[in-house]
Amino acid sequence: MEWKQVSPTRWERPATGLEGYFISSENTAAKFCGGREHYMLLSRQTLDITDLAGIDVEAVFRRAWTQMRWVQPLLAATVDGMTKVYEVPDDAALEKWLASTFVVASDDSTPDAEVLYRRVAGVGAAPIAQATLYWVPRSAELVLRAHHHTIDGVGVLLFWHRYLSAVAAAVGDPESSATKITFGAEPARLSPALEVALGHDGLKQPATAEQAEAAMKLFGSWATSIPGVGPPSKVGAAPSGACRSTELGFSAAETTALIAACRRAGVTVTAAAQAAYVSAVTRHADPAKLRKGLYSTANQFDLRPHLAAPYDTDAHAVSVYYTPVPYRADVPAGFWAVARSLQEHYQTTFRGAGGADMLALNGHFARVLCAAAQTPEFLAAPVPSDALVSSLGVVERRVRREYGCGGDDGSEKEKKIRVRDLKMGVDVVLSMTMLFIYTFGDRLRLVYSFNDGFEDPEDIQKYLEETRTIMTEELLKPAPNGKAGQINGNAGQVNAAVLSLTIPVV
Image 1 (cartoon, one colour):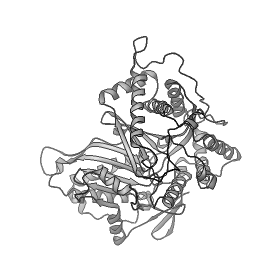
Image 2: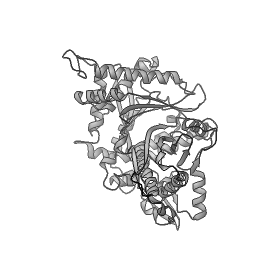
Image 3: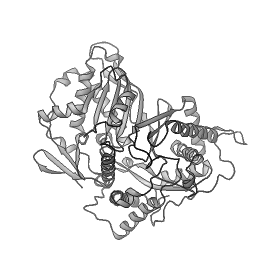
Image 4: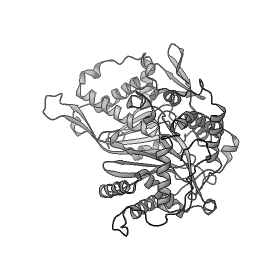
């Protein structure tokens, strides 16, 4: 699955199983929804560029975007069927790429990124062929939209760090902006497929009989249990509407208290927030799905910590280096039972005795998922209405709040670019909503991406509010011993055996 040069300027490699799954999902959505593609990632940064007064920031942003293509060329890759393609640009091709992928929304009808998003991701919007960066000068916002087969959520954060670092360097050293970037050697920096980065190239090392069986069982544990509990949805009974992402933010004080309570209780904020969400949607579950008595999902795992350098760094930000793993729990159940079960799943799936086997199995499982997702039976099956949960952790571990540009004008004060806010979302065109969990600016954020043709915005807001209420009640309420965040009594029973494999993954 390695990149191969097929002409003097063209490089290709097969898509991985997970990349193929996203390509297939995008193609299905485009076929039925006027060209709009499912699971297009969106991220917005609100900047304070007061220190850059007098500087042509548009030119600097454009230059940095060009540099990012040179440093991380996968940013400009396209797909041909199930093949990833990168082409080295000449001057004309580079200008064409810039014209289509670096967009300045300076017109009076685009006051901010929210309006821009409704325009570029709304019903009837034209699809994009490659990752695209938008600059909205009126609100000082940068917006990145990219296919999920090109980059993942953690990769987006790493991209922002590299991009803002490039912007800061250009501001601090204006002469560098006059230096022409020469393309031609950048294919050497194309991010390899996840399987190659893991050392388990599925084309060079076909699955053993045991791995093939385990991959099928792992996929089957999810496919045979969905849809699990989830809220009502109009998928299949109404046309696809506009892609929306609703954010709920906790105060800094709430966030500090919740983090401390989670530490005392021995669970992560991710496990606690997801458990609260499970409780919230169980309260409002579609009765037919609730009778099944099962919460079934695919938890998301960033695999960069398991990769060798440089693939574990922002040098390969533009990549798909994560994997989903099936998880299920009996519901209704107590908050703490689900939180503990989720904690175990997140902490042990790729660590401990079975971790190495799970890493080796990852590529085989992803190919089973990709193949199944293209079958008529899979496409015709009922779809889950609960949100896939994606935790991005503490954003500042990957994106700084400010970037120093140096005092090139001789002043004592260093020019700085400040990141005032950051939001993550995804285009939900077909179904399978998403819930992003992360902290930025000392505040916990929950962002629910959905389609307003299938879910009412008021209901989404209600699920978020109840998730916050459950979290604060369970984590911050006083216990009999006077301490918050303690587990009291029988929390309920959970089926923690996620799947019947010889490889322990729960």
